[in-house]
Image (cartoon, rainbow, N blue to C red; front, side, top):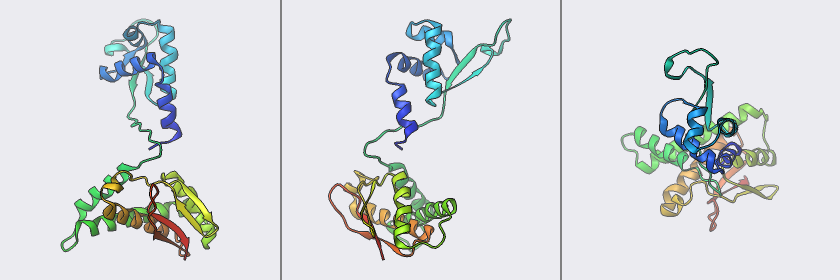
Length: 229
């Protein structure tokens, strides 16, 4: 997902010394001291400390004080660094392939007898969207929603999920980006059906009864727009 922290993490790596130390620490598969990190790129310990702390601030490394090799020696316990579990992906425009993959995997695992793979995917997508909508309703507590208020809430929610919503009129929100592109271009019937069900479920979870998700494909955009019903 493309977020401010992800962009910050990538920016922190836009330095040859940080890249080198980060790669060394990932390869080490153990906590690495400042001295070791400095030696890996041929700089002083003091300069290495500056760059390592930048990587910690960006969420790429975590630091703690630990006796190297488990042996406590006289003097200050050294600071050691190891990689975090952060998964960094920056895509512009934003893509959410992991959401689609998760829906399709869940569909395969829960497909019932007499249900096609496509029906299972649509069912799972609807439920996933409903969970997101319900969570947003619980967070914002908007009360009874008219069409315009619901569309305003949906603009913020859909922006966080990579759809790049744009208000074409007080009663219509167009989704300018398909987070599932280019997979949608390879299997439009399946992916658009999943996307439609996902957004329809989101409306159900938000209890936005005055809004409907309508399939209106346009080149280079999401296949769905949200309208007052």
